[in-house]
Image (tube, rainbow, N blue to C red; front, side, top):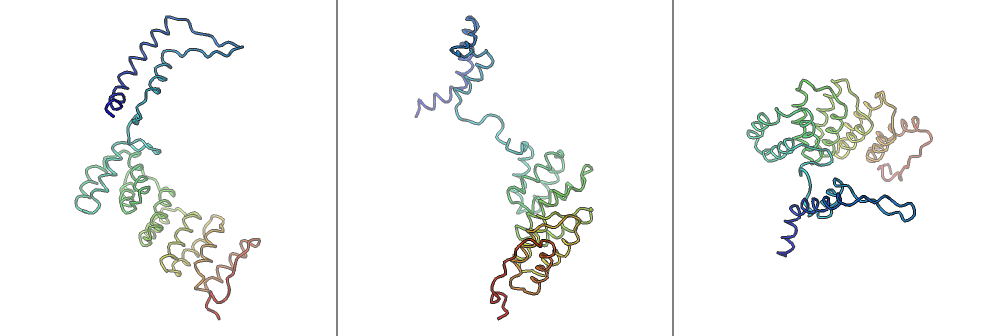
Length: 257
């Protein structure tokens, strides 16, 4: 184990030394030209040789900043995310942290913080950041920001907050897409509020976008205990999608018999 640790710890030191040695040796001898018959590979140049040797003696530790992920979240943005999560249970400390750190973030970092909080399921914190973004001079109403937050709130069963954002989106002149309607309808059905789900459904029928099947099928499944409401949705579905089939379970499920 000691020898193994010593070898790994010395890899970075050995790499430049070996690279210089091989590079000096390669400069003294002529480069081989690829033979058309034997396909002899050409020797690496000094610069490529350094990279090859460093990869050869790579010790397994990550290269570059650890905070660089798929979405390239910066170091300061990551610090803010961690701070928000640390103080989320203490309103006073959270507000002080937001005032001293969040407000000074650049546009890209602030949007990155919002996305990272959503990815980690910190929806309430994401809403706080979104409200701050709305007050920035560079903010313009974005349907995708609204959509991601509304869908996240609906999946977290926070329907009141989801509908507040819904109303705010409407005031900004933006329209939900089919996925947003689907998640809101599913959220109300999961919450045991079929009447609210039907209100969203009626709003969906007035949308300028062409209707899609999925929200209809979610309603048809969720309204099984409510046959009158389900029949309304079924009639609309058959008019809009005459070539599609709807499975009707036995009448006992509806409570008719």
